[in-house]
Image (cartoon, rainbow, N blue to C red):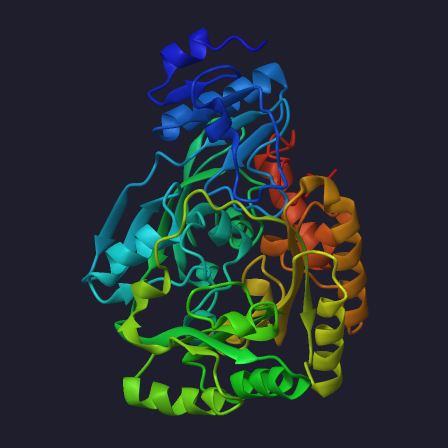
Length: 452
């Protein structure tokens, strides 16, 4: 067993070992399919703690898992026999409303950051779920509810403080370690542990947004995507095509029927937003319409902290969702043996697409639609069966494009990681990796091995 006494005396944070009170809670991550038992969990308090934990991982040669919010689709925030570096206690946030910038520690989640920024009428775009840690989603790219208006999260990343494999704390931006700064914007946790991130803030006050639930037919699905693509870039839209869950705002007769459970966010003038959203409401009689003017922060309502879905997913990009594709989606969802099969469609473009592909390690600027196929179920023992269904549906939906978004990748092997970082992006990331982590200490991620 790993001795924890010296470490506990050397750090400010908390050290949790197997058998300690709270160990089982501390090792849990968001996806209930992962039930892993690390050798040690360290809830760090500052960058000095981070450096000491990295040093321990090097000394013991144990795997190092770095956790911000615990939402990694691959479960990279925890591993059997590993040292878990848990950033969740590091939640400091300093907002400068006049300069429209914020320094945020990476244990913060998107909800708390957004609520604090929203008090000033400002926002940075993260994902679409409030409990996601800002560290992981930022380093992978960040495709959220402001993606068409303000771009990816990394497009608003101005600087970072990062502890490298040798324990050095670096300030990284366009002028300091510029190649590392390029790699951090989309290259994931390959290069060190980001402890603080500096973001640009945008004026985002009252938006028109919320959930719109429509009955799912091929025409409705295809028309929804067409309307989202045609809409002004102030609108970002996510469509979850799935069986209707037994939610209290849905009439019981709709439970289990195929629906489009959409999340819409119009970041602009309220009257213009209402006009933009009218075509979506006209696609079919809504089963639920919760779209309204609201502060942007209300797009991240409180979540049940005990909710741990058991699921598996696969991500890809699509060029089109026409009637035939929509029909295939509905047919395949109905074929799932899981309680819930889902195909999620996110329309891209706008500000995200105007950034040159080579400007950051996120290389997929020109993609039109981000698609995720997922199965949610109850028994983790059923994983192989549902994993096979997800892979099969993703293959059937493929339109000849093997590209992938690293932030939604599961543990799928090097070929899929290369699909997230194609061509020269991979070679450039490998060179940065060799410069800052030649021993591949940070390998529990969508790993890019060091060049050479």
